[in-house]
Image 1 (cartoon, rainbow, N blue to C red):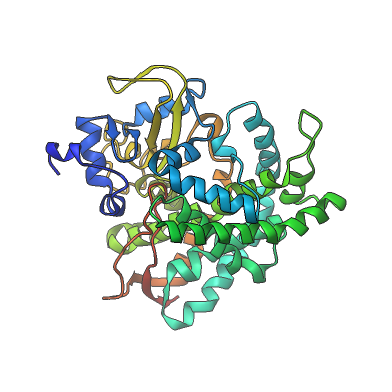
Image 2: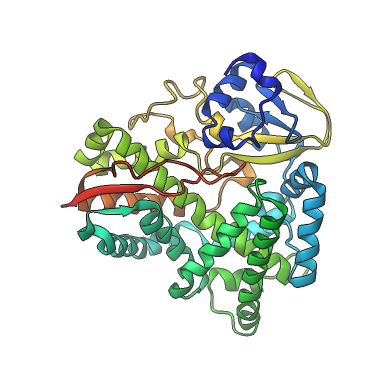
Length: 419
C-alpha cells in the first residue's frame, strides 16, 4: 500500500476488513487522524491518541454513536430498520457503550454488581466443567472446527447460565447474536438487513414473557437485577431498554468477543510451533501472557465510535464539533511506540495487559474479568488434553466475517492427538 492509496482507503472495504493491518500501519505513520470519506469518520490509530480519547468522555461522547454512523452511511436503510422494529417489536435503545453518564453509570452499576470479582470466582468451576465437556465431544475424533465446536459454545453457555436461559436454547441465542453482528457490520444489503432485524425481533419476543415473570418473582439472576433494580428516578428500565441491553451488552458482549479471541488464539498457536511448545511446556507460567497477547494482536472489537462535543485536535489535525471518531483499538494495540516488536506474540511482554482490547476509562469492558477466565479455561483445557495441535491441511481459508467493527473467524479446522 502506497501513499496515494490514502485517497481511496475505506474501512468499509471487505478486503481491508479481512486484513486491516497494512492499512493500520500506513495511516498510523502517515495520517494518524485519517478521514474515511466513505464512512464519514475520522480514524484514529495511535495508542496514545486512542487512549486519550477514551479517557475524555466530556469531549468525546459515546451517546448514540452507532445509530449516527448508520444514518450517515445509509440513512434510508437506518430508517427502514427502525420502521420494522416499531411495527413488529421494540425500537432498540442505546446500550452501555452508547450512553454517557449519568445514565451510563446507573445501568453500569447493575452489571458491575452482577459481574463482581467474587461472582466470577464462583463461576470458575462451571466454566472449567463446560470446557471439559466440549472437549469430550470431539477429542476422540482427532479433529474439529474449533470455532463452531468450542469457541462459540463455551462463553455462550456460561453467559446463558447467568441469565437463566435453558442450555438447549444456546444455538437459538447464537442465531440471534449473529443477526445483531451482521446488522452492525454495515455490510448487508437492504433485504439482508431486514432479515436480521426480524431475527432481533424474535429475540425481543422470546424474552418478553421471561421479563414479565421476573418482575413478579425476582430470582437474583443478572437478568432479574436488570429488570427490577430501581433507578434514581424511582422507575425501572423499560422493556425496549432491557431487550437492548440483553442482546448487545450481555449476549453479544458476553460471548461473541470471547469466542473471537479464543479462535484467534488457537490460530496463533497453530501458526507458531515454537510459541506453542513454549506455552505447553509450562501452561501455568505462560498462559496469562498468552491471553493478553492474543487480545492485543487480534483485538476482537476492532473499533468503537465517539462523537466530538466541541472542536478538538487529534494527531495534529483540527477536527470540528459533531464529528464521528473511529477508535481503532486493533491498530493502537500494534503501535510500536507502545509495544516494541508489535507483530510478535511475546509471552514475557511486560506491558501486554495495557492493551486497549477492553477499552479504558468509564467504558472499560465490564465483562473483561469473565472473558479472561473463559479464555484461561478454554486454552488450558484444550492444550492439556491434546498434543500436536495443528491446522487441518487444505481445509481452512482463514476468512473472517465481514464487518466494520468486530473481527470474527468464520471457522478453524484443526487436528490433534489426545493426551
